[in-house]
Image 1 (cartoon, rainbow, N blue to C red):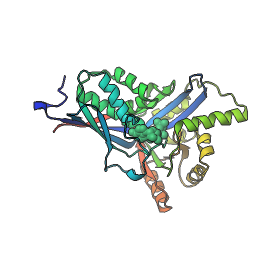
Image 2 (image 1 turned 90 degrees about the horizontal axis):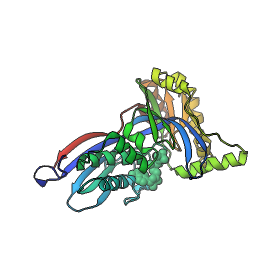
Image 3 (image 1 turned 30 degrees about the vertical axis):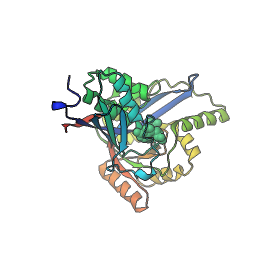
Length: 321
Ligand code: ATP
């Protein structure tokens, strides 16, 4: 077991990065008695990374700050810096499972749009879990870490795992999917966030209004997994599906503009990512994604070219201070 404060009682800093995600397929079942929805989801981790630096402190407890290296405008962010913060909750949970944890300060670099449907908070939680595990030498197995991750939120286990995966249950029961080729996307973040519970509630409301009784999602279309496996972006473009999309559009009708523009301006397909409002445009290749992002930038629309799959949470450095 490593000593939490390093040689000679000095402090240690562990830096971990964890990716945001898009859902290339998201089927949502009816509202369950426990207030959750069963889903059948295909996650793809993309090259937009959150980072958490966990530094041991002499004072006990968990503190958090946002790093000025963040690419998001820190003044505009609605992120709690107390025990409601997902990274803090992750560290507190790890501390409960560790003998004699030190205090820890978490410095979070935000790059994934907040409340954007890309699992940014979940990526912070996954990064904090892995960082504290290393800092405190908790010795948890991969399975145990995934179990702790699921306690923090449905998308946290995938941020740990990365790559591509099918998520059942509430999205936390993961099976890795084979995806060896790179898929290129352009992300269009919105200037506003959407609360995930609100988007699910809007879907329930729309279904009630239309008298639709949704079926429990039984699994994922084999064709989607085949397109991922063979790197067939054209094939995948016909299969993208998101049951939450119309609920997100119901709450934010302006999303239609970007979706419509993308479809007639070179994207293979466009989809709201998860609960939105970030929109993900699938591109033929990296050059097409760069062109699309440049076109959008020219129109004054923020756009980020990314690719996936990329690995899940990884330790970048482990330094004795
Ligand atoms: P998901 O797709 O996983 O449901 P999201 O990507 O839409 O989530 P997040 O950016 O994860 O949304 O944040 C959702 C809310 O969680 C925010 O509005 C914020 O108040 C709260 N939150 C707590 N911790 C964090 C964190 N570390 N980073 C961002 N938001 C956080």
